[in-house]
Image: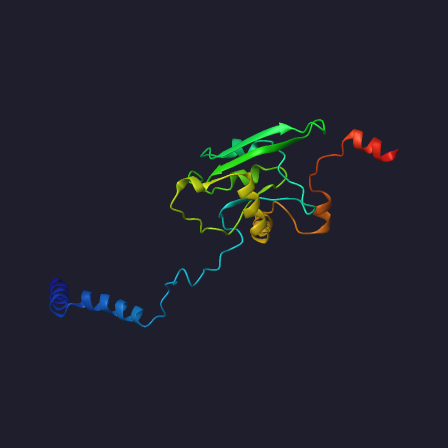
Amino acid sequence: MDTQKQTTRLLDAVLFREIWKAMKVTFKHMFHRPMTFQYPREKRTIPDAHRGALGLLRYDNGQERCVGCDLCEAACPSRCIKVISEEDKSLPLQRYATEFYIDITKCVFCGYCVEACPVNALAMTKMYEYSTHDKRTLLFNKQRLYEIGEQHLEDAKKYLYAHNQEQDDEESRAYRYHFPQPIGKTEASDS
């Protein structure tokens, strides 16, 4: 057996069998269709569960969903969210976010802020092209977040549906959280 192993090793060394095996793999891959995307012209199909830029959403009637509860700020592991909220003077016990900032340069796109939001005011979109020469433009304020949310509304809703945070049917729309009607308004509308 020793002589047979030695002759096999000698033939492998003389005929360069390892190199031919490697060349076989190389030639097999030479005739495949290329997998490279020509990026600016060709775009990839992105799944609904993609975690892209964050956007703030509104209700169907145009009212802001964000209630200023600061849960997204507390859930964020990289501390890139800053929410400043106030109580609504005309409606007691109701809060709203006066200022909302997300520093995208710090964001790790984990989605914890979206999961923590009780009213689904935050959603992730499929937007991933926001490179810039100035880092300060990547500090998104409330207005910019609403613009992103309105521009990518369908993607944001698909993200919420994909993560079972919101359903797209009449029954779930009826049970979405809205602020209760203030007592003063219901009495005024009855008279």
